[in-house]
Structures are given as C-alpha cells and as structure tokens.
Length: 100
Image (tube, rainbow, N blue to C red; front, side):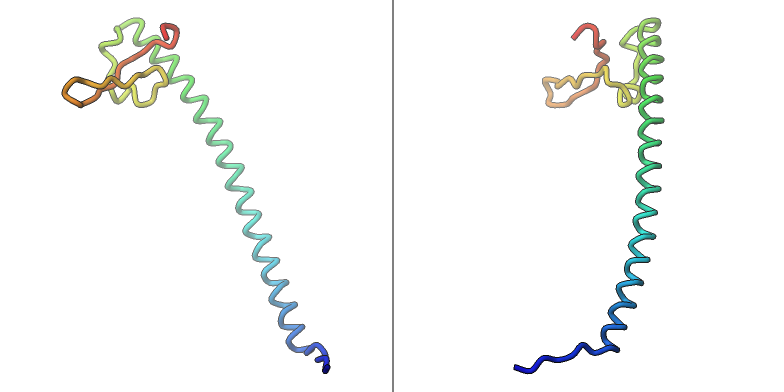
C-alpha cells in the first residue's frame, strides 16, 4: 500500500478557501442577526399598532354601531366573523369578543 503525502499546494489552497468561506459565513450571520432584530422590532411595533387599532375600532363601533364598520376596517380586526350567505358568497361582520 502506497500512502500519498499531502500536497502542500492543495492543502494551502483548501485552507485559503476555508478561511474565505468562514469570513463569508460570518458576514451572512451578522446580516441575519440584524434581520432578526429588525423583524422582532417590527413585530412588537405591529402588535402595539394592532392593539391601538382594536381599541379605536371598538370605540367607533360603540358610538356609530356595528353596521357602520366597513369590511376594510374589519380586515385589521380580531373581532370579526366570516358569514357565509345562502348564495354561497360571504361577508365580514363585527363580533364583539365579549359576546362570544
């Protein structure tokens, strides 16, 4: 059995390739960490905005009545039900969470 000794040129080339890839991965990981931080911040801001929207919409419904709420408004609300009509269409309606 004949053992080949490592080729120093090949070893050096692979080592350089590994070092370059490690640097590339570190850059990618840093960018991923920034993206995760931004996503987390946006989720927190969105959650707060949704709570404020829900509070405002509930106050609006209490004053103007549930029949005045547009379907566009209901798309952002958690207090909504989908009603299936006899003609196989559907629409959204306000549903006060305290009533369910």
